[in-house]
Image 1 (cartoon, rainbow, N blue to C red):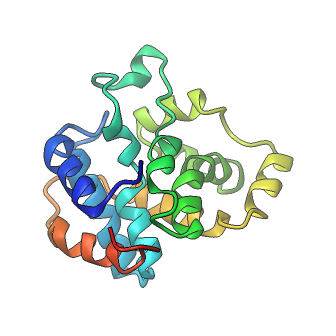
Image 2 (cartoon, rainbow, N blue to C red; image 1 turned 180 degrees about the horizontal axis):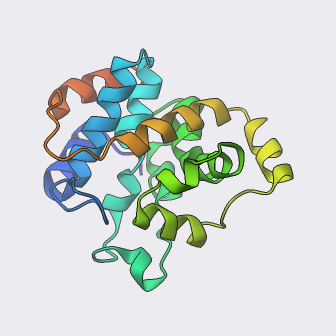
Length: 184
């Protein structure tokens, strides 16, 4: 079943106020900050949609607070994809699906990147397969949506600022709507 924009808006209304595990922001604040960074840094509508929706998978299940403390990888990067497929372009889905592997890639290729991660992000990294080997990193970055996933990941890392004002959800839903394959 495809997610309509109304269903996405409802999901943010119902679950967006939940704490983003291990961070000083809610799920909605994180999504809005990530989308705002994408917009402010010249991302196209598809990247803004990916930034807004990249963690939607967290809202589709309830593993409780901070599942990484219990050794759980919620595989959130894949959870929403079946419901977004056919609604958004492959570039949106590819950036969402790749944002976790982009963290693994950046840890392997950027000195100091791993140390900059929050404690929860470091725990999830271990659960998600750890730092890429050089060969894994090379294979990842050659993928069709890898560059977009890396850019999304960098915004994702910065979108955790307590009390940061952003445009409202409706603004970013409108930007995401412009990148839809079908009007839903």
